[in-house]
Amino acid sequence: MNGKETLLQAWDSAYGKEEWYPPFSEALNGVTAEQAAWKPEGSSVNSIWETARHLLYYKERFLRRLTGEEREYPEGVTNDDTFAIGDATEDGWRNTISNLEKVHFDIRDRLAALAEERLDEKLPHTPIGKWAHNLLAHDGYHVGQIILLRKLQGSWPARRSFE
Image (tube, rainbow, N blue to C red; front, side, top):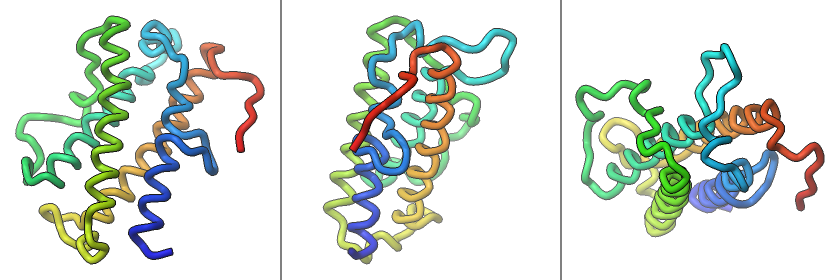
């Protein structure tokens, strides 16, 4: 398996194919807007929804870099800004999930279409392959947080089976 094939396999696993940890789609499966907005009382932790918006923001940035629409970090945007929910309704939550899935697969399509040697191409300072691998690690980190929140709220199954 070459580097590009390994990257694509990991990209597929991160969103929808369980490997070493539940994929993002499974972590969000069945979550309502109310559950997504929930935070433990008295805790300064981000909600599932805020975390999903944060992941969406950085994936959209990577996609804009892949398409040439963005070269530099947007001025005036802080990391804290990336957690904003926006439309805090059930439809808003469904749109967040839908947009996250769409951008994930749009990036996957772009990566699949690249010649392997382009993974070393910098956008503008970071190689494409490194961007993608960093986003995968970022997903894994935040999926763990989402699952912990679901366990705390009682919405994560006590026992799961997977293949």
